[in-house]
Length: 599
Image (tube, rainbow, N blue to C red; front, side, top):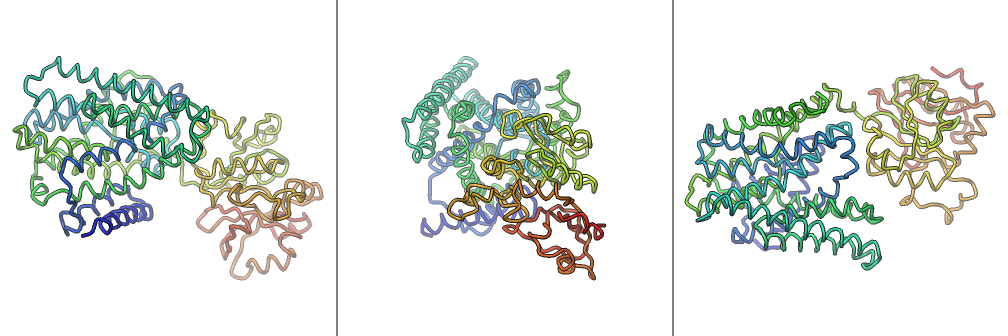
């Protein structure tokens, strides 16, 4: 098969698997691995004509970018909130997991001690490739999410480094404790010099304009790969530790370009994950899969028990919430780094005289599938039972406290729809607080709000201040979290109503309610006696009948929102319209004399 055709098949299969997983709400890694097995060992469609060592090097480059992107997501400001837990998970957790996993690999799977020690080190990692999607799926609160995220991203390179040092200790002739400690020191020095100092220098140059904007993201990608390669020259597989540290440094430098750089890396990471999780399992041979006997299956199940014991010992006496400890004790899915590392050390251990290392890669894939299914399918239910996760997103975040938004919030909360009102002026929130409406006093775009403000339970955003451009700024900043199709702002002032003078859709949120429903108009109508009312549609009384009674929509009354028969809230916008039918509860803004139709 031509290389171009094969590349297209891999890309299409990977992204299609990601989409299918999103549609059926399964962890993407499960669908990707299944697709790779079908296209590789089962059908033989994917057969890469690359030597194993070259393929391993290419996989390593992809993993380096993934870990760098994960490192950029680690914010040091989070340590003030969960630092006590992160220290236990990243310092005590890895050696405990390594010890217990190695004992299980030898006693249950029947592996020789060298192979068992390497496997135990490989399975220390959890990783951002599986943790971050599960966090989005489970809608965890920010403290619990931070603990799992930090553990996954930091322990990935730590586990790989443990595997490297264990491999060297067990297989290299004349190796010993001195050589192992020397290798560890070399890895740390390489990470500090190439990753830490290199990341800081890169950020310094970017901040001072030494690189044009259109080249910053591509150059950063090449620099990440260069740091990975240079660190590996100093110490085998030290590159993963270096790129993770480099990501942390750049991510915490408060660069203006950080969001744009991270968005580029996130998109690239999705593509790389789609490719790697297709390619790696496709290289498994049917003979390797046949090695999975009952002892291997029992070991995979035992790894589900190793995790609770590890977390119990690591967090003993730690000032952490009991609920967080229980969640951490269960959630530990393995990801791409474990698979890639097993692909590196399996053949090397066989060549060093350990034939049972041929089982290493299929064992790791079995553990990946077992843990991802077990943890991915239960994390949401467990988090909700422990009170660490939001319910299904269904509610409204209102930015800007005013008499009109207060009236809207009261109408929604009366029907038990979640509302959170945010404003930077404490006195403007007074009426909402007195009415029992949830409020947040502070700047929605602040770092405090980013780490403290819990919005996972809310589905829609309405920016309703008197500043059109601030509304647009917030919509664009929060659009990725809520989904741009769920991000709305009040109409712009009449002075900016000419098409050529308006903000383009790419620079703002969707206009809520109607094109002329701006801040002044809504408050003028409120002063004129308009109120927010509700009515429930039926087969005999639909939207047409409501319009006939109230008059022209947008002029005589405004449709604000609807709640479906299933209880889902939808804000109305002519740019994102919906058609309410029988059973829908509608919220509308109309003169008070028309309130006779409210339910």
